[in-house]
View 1 (tube, rainbow, N blue to C red):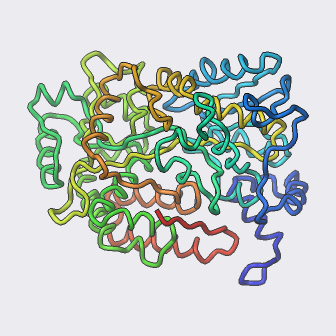
View 2: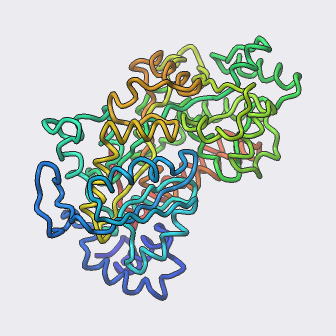
View 3: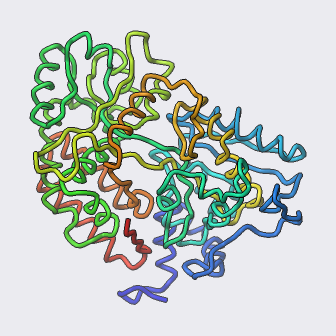
Length: 483
């Protein structure tokens, strides 16, 4: 197989390694990794599945987990922490398999920690592949490194064995993790996205969250005169928080099709009027930001908000829990949807992005894939999901798992916002998992736009150029979604 320029397959494999983050080892250990990939199935129609473990399958043990097989779990320790794994999911697994040892690894540098291990073939069994240093899931799948999770979603639910796991999850969960038409990613957290603020402060000041961008600029003026930075995000490591807002606004203007077309690398998707209008509107808000925030990380900006130095902050529903240790009693998290751009917007002000997020993956070459599948099935039980919410402060994709829980102010606010939105839900974006090079470029250009270095037209042109480049690169496996 070769690409359009006649480059040998080996080069394409090296391109894939670069996208996974293995360039540093291409000349050394990756040689054997490449050889392994060449025979691993790569892009073939056959998908890796859990290998026979030596244990009999049953209704209680549908994957045939060997009772004493060790399990290694790697967790991204970010806004969700890792107590949900150490205090809930891992003990539940140990309860089921008391002879098994569970090794727990927590890190904020997923790719940096795991890329040498993928190169050597010594991969963990289960990974929370998240954060700013996540691995490229699309490239991993192309290299045959990810387990097809169809068997997980078709397995009997722990709570009701008459139901498949997939039938106990909120709609769209399985679809959000598709690569090449199959589910390779478990998106576990049900996240709502919007603009966060201190509800107590706004009540005290008599400030009302804006419903239009004109109102947004007006209240930013008022807030600035009061001595606060009206709007901020962390440019150093979390510019994706901001590009989410740009994409949400574009979808409100045109409808969800624009986000589907961006995912599908449709010609001209980034230069559509809805994207230009959104980028221009957000660039105007960018004028109210403190330029020094481009050099800050998310927790630094979030702590400044907790100290009432920042009014509005774009993020998701994990924010409140992430800042728990730094939130004074005078601060109460509340969320508002992104403002409407025009009266002709296809979606109303109440529309918000609510999606299954936080990707978890199972390496196909792990030592205990059956155990990893069972670990994921435990996560998708009501007990596992309820415990996750209690420890992480975030809701899961498991239907009904939060019933009976007392929600914090921030979670109640996002829950109320999702209720108000009804069917007006802004869709998820898949390019973030499919095309890491495109996502990396979007972080860069978002900062350039919001901190005043390029115009909205330039932003759209640069993103379209990158999307065209990704589309033209035969070394990148193309994906497609219809809904």
